[in-house]
Image (tube, rainbow, N blue to C red; front, side, top):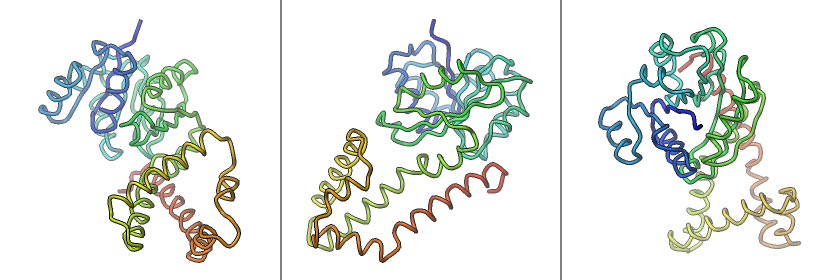
Length: 269
């Protein structure tokens, strides 16, 4: 029997998860949603046929609560939920930087908590969702969480100590690729291509490269070397990238993202 799942604070990621579950066969009758604005709740009900309820009602009725509010709003939401959440409810957090201990300290003793960092490709069922167990979460809780988030892409279990690194690499990862595509599009225009053509060329190159990385099993160095012929165009471009410290800049950027995730855990805004 399918358990009832509630998505609390249903924004873009929450809605992507909701729609993915429905496409995957999860009955709308077993899904609850909450939203801050009444018109947003009405929109979700009309679009997906799910029931919109209050946070307290969701806590009472659902077997699994998926909390998708922003990190700075999580404390306030937990204060509202805590009186209504029994110790056997699975609580899944999608808030960057917020450790499972934050929830365990505010919920009933022994409450199972799972921490998940997903990313925006959930909107097209290509998410990477990184899953970590809290102190009281069992293997069954992890499998259930994987079943839910598997509806919108791939899942990977990691120790919670690696969540900040995963947030920097995967949670924020799509933005780095968008940034790169934006820069390459500008370069294409500089080289004389119309914007639309430059964009199409780069996006398809990105899709093709990603599929090759996923399906070939080859190390990225080998794939790059296959494109890099002696004294050719590619090696000249690679030399310029190295000369401008692009590799070092990317490493520094990810370290900065990881550090910010850690700051969020301490409540620094």
